[in-house]
Image (cartoon, rainbow, N blue to C red):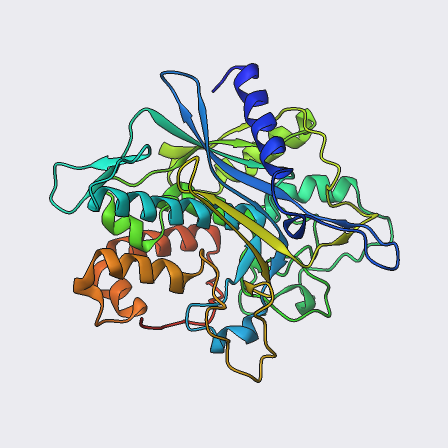
Length: 381
């Protein structure tokens, strides 16, 4: 993977796969002539023996659901719909499906049965790469944001409370506020007058996952050994942007055993989000369970496109995405029926305490002043 040809191979695979997505998963030109833009991300498995690549998931998106909408979620609303997070959710959905294949006596090209009863292992010859068409939002992209900023952009003093979600937690900043401050946790960007989301930035999530694994709680329970990203591929970076991104994503995590190898390459992306385009409201995700078994969905306001209802109304039946917590928990319970009578949060508290302690340790390092939590969404099947 380290060779230039391997990196370019990944970029070409993502580009070809992107244009195979349905038009609904890609930006469009609005009726008033305004162009939309988006970000594309993909998780790829790289075979260290053969040099071949295997697409696992691809996603588009730049949206995040306001925290106020999560009270009616019951696991069905996808909170964070930024492309790289959707792609990582897709990875976990594919792993669950491949474990299900093995339990049904079928083959899997990603996981194998472990020597420990009921456990599975990621194939040792496969390394994971995450491709993102732009630097992840949050601290890793602050240098790029500053270089592209206007002289009249608002800068805050440290005492200005507009830049904080919680004025008592000064190590978490809201969105792009005060972009000259470096090394801080940030929430998902949005206009200062937009509804608040407590979802932390993609930079911070990547920092956390390189210490705690890219596995969600369900796969963390099923796999004998956690797995991590090996490579982060972000195209068209200058040397300064590349070095700052490495510094940001490496220096802010406590576990130095799984540092991301950040690589750049050339990538011409005509639907790229920039200052001349409006963010596309639709997000898309496509999962490659196998090369012949795929599923693609469009997501709007955290639910499958066409299923959204106003916050005052209940969520419609079958509105949840395949990568939602509800869908993943449903798949997990089908494979492990011994958990069918407990809720999702009860499962995490009873069986994922070590993982929770690790996550809390990382949060304490990233934000010593404390943490801002999202709504504790609980549900049963």
